[in-house]
Amino acid sequence: MDDAQQLIGIIDQFAATRVALYGDLVLDRFILGTPKRISREAPVIILRHEEQQDIPSGGANALANLAALGVQVSVIAAVGDDEPGRALTAALDDRGVDTSRIETVPGYSTPTKVRILGGGPSSLKHQVARYDIEDTLPEEGDWKTSVLNHLREESSRCGALAISDYGYGCVRPGALQHLAQSKSGTPWLCLDSRYRIGRFVGVHGATPNLEELEAHCGRRLRFDSAVATAADELREELGARFVLATRGNHGMTLVEKDHDPHHIPVFGSDQVADVTGAGDTVLAVLTAALAAAAEPVEAAHLANIAAGLVVMKLGTATISAAELRTAITSSEKVE
Image (cartoon, rainbow, N blue to C red; front, side, top):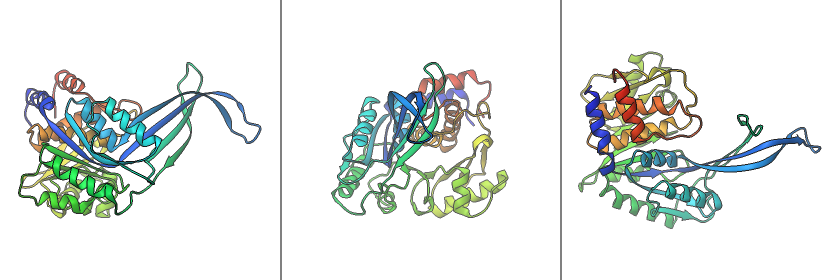
């Protein structure tokens, strides 16, 4: 592993780096209120509305992380012709993401996770209810042609392409296989797929968490060696250069073609505050580092540091380049 200065040198290249994200966009909506009384209609608390917060989630959280790193970032995706879709696009615009290649699809409902939180004016709000608005993009339509055109255009301009597949239908494995086989020069293709990771033959790297890796291989993975074996099987199946398996408080395991497995201990405390969106942060930092000419092992170490930082924050959160630099310089040893 190269020293801290080399990792900081990679971070310093982020501002000159261009990354695109192809994937499913989700909106996290938080509705906050204070308790008013018990309803006469049902045994539930009535909350007096205080405020609403909209936060990018899913692939949109990876975009927010890329923007926080200072990367030049664009998105290839689709949203519904609805208020959540417009709110999500505006939230990404506000963070400096190029949203000109987001397609609006009539009849499609933008995936939205609505959480209702209640508590006193000076106390911590607690979740009292949640409802999800979920939909799947249609198999065919003008949106699909436009997205594929955007994908070809952006792949020729960026240093890496992050792929965020949450199962809502935007990401098409066949499109990526065609891109990987292109002779015109292909950027790094880095995949995070929730449910169907084995279908994306031709990507260069993948970032399954332990649960996803176990679901794919069909067995429990209790030891470093078992995780490394399953990750390498997935790497060969995809024809990828590497697989980075994230393992919670056990850190990460990197397997690369023609290299021994590399186990990375968790960075910082193993007492986490919130793992929400940590996989999106890993995808963002890994992809940004690869686009900045890092080797996979260097990119994996940076992603591990970012994961250790973001899980100490509550809710869907991001990590900035400055936070990464501070963590590296203040750590006695980066391994």
